[in-house]
Amino acid sequence: MQPKTPKLLEDVRDAAAFIREATRGKTQEHYRGERLLRQAIERNFEIIGEAVNRLAVHDPETAGRITKHRRIVDFRNLLTHGYDLVDWCPMVTGASGKRRRPARCGTGDAGP
Image (cartoon, one colour):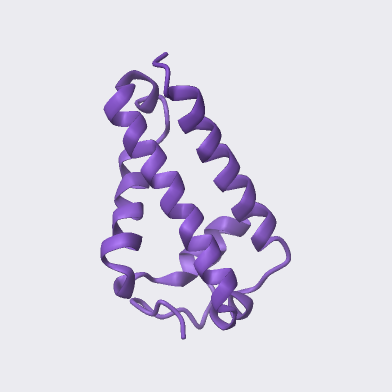
């Protein structure tokens, strides 16, 4: 394990815990209507993706043990560079752990 690995993993854990807490009891309407909530959640997804990206650079062996680590980094890149293309509904349903896609989701609709 590389020296930076524990800190990067802790950053991922902390950001994921924040997302879980911030989305507890929230609906897609909350997410769409509350800019502060939406930006806080998106920022923490960016932190997770950046930490996993740095982990892949500094400790590829550990990064390789993270399921779909490349997709995590790709999602971070989409949030950062393609923010206007984000379909916000999977983010909300994914964070809440529910697998059903809400009926009113729109592709490429990053919210209000």
